[in-house]
Amino acid sequence: MDDQILRNKSVVRDFTATTLAAIPNTFGRLIYITSLRDLSSGTYDHAGLAALYPQDAIQESLECCHHEIFQKILETPLSVQADDLRECLRGMPGSFKSTVSHWRQLESYRILPPGNAPDYLKELFFSNLRALLEILEAECSRARSSA
Image (cartoon, rainbow, N blue to C red; front, top):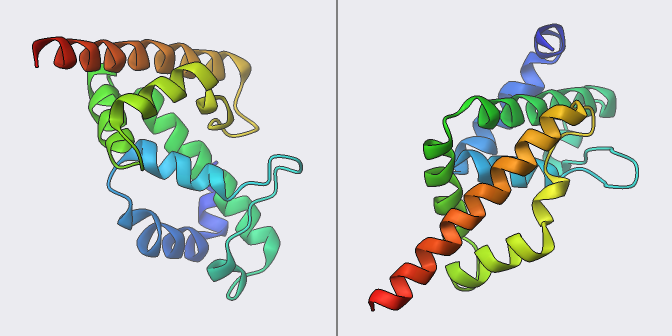
């Protein structure tokens, strides 16, 4: 992974400085980079980078960034992940409670890991997200009952 970063340092620097830096939380960054990936082919597309760099460099760089963000989340304590996820979901359209509920029911988070992530890391991520969403949903219920 480090070799890929060095080979495509300018693409990674451009992407992190101009795009990812504007996203205030790690889950938001993961969601954004996932949105750049075509789910059928696994190919990443970013119009701004495409105007400046070859597609192979973009693909390799965004795969690498996706993996790094995913790893960062997994290496973060669950309490910090909960705060980050809470902030991310609060920034989405609609009510926080509705968003949490949809995420739990639809398991839309299942598309977030990079395609090349090992299955055991994907399962850890999914398990963590299920637990975090249960916690956030319980917080919503407690807030409603105490209001």
